Image: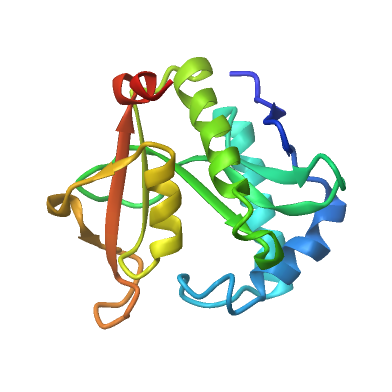
Length: 187
């Protein structure tokens, strides 16, 4: 499949990663507030490796986590996209929608706007039957985005993230889903 290089929403450009995104991305991923629902903030090297994995995902699958840029300022503000779930669970194999934004861009509706656009790409262009999203039970801000884009949860789908130690406070996760029919009903 030819990679999907770019998506547009009214205020945002979802594009391929550039080398000059690294400083802003590393700064965002080193921020303890941004990373509070992840095991730990990332070092600059870990952030660079993540960009490399994202580029590899695009090369393999034709889609991935797009760099997120504001159209008005041309500023890199985070990422939004689709990726194959990288661990085994009751709901895998699956395609996950995810996002991460720098904190100065929170509360402006960018995460929902970008996620809605990406979900449309997943169902219309990639012809996916279902998209999932998951997060720590305590991550209410991300759950609000999941709900805003029409995703649903059922407590029977809650799971312990297999890549976190048993006693880790972020291990309990909630799973949200949306299928093509549900998405079409929101249009």
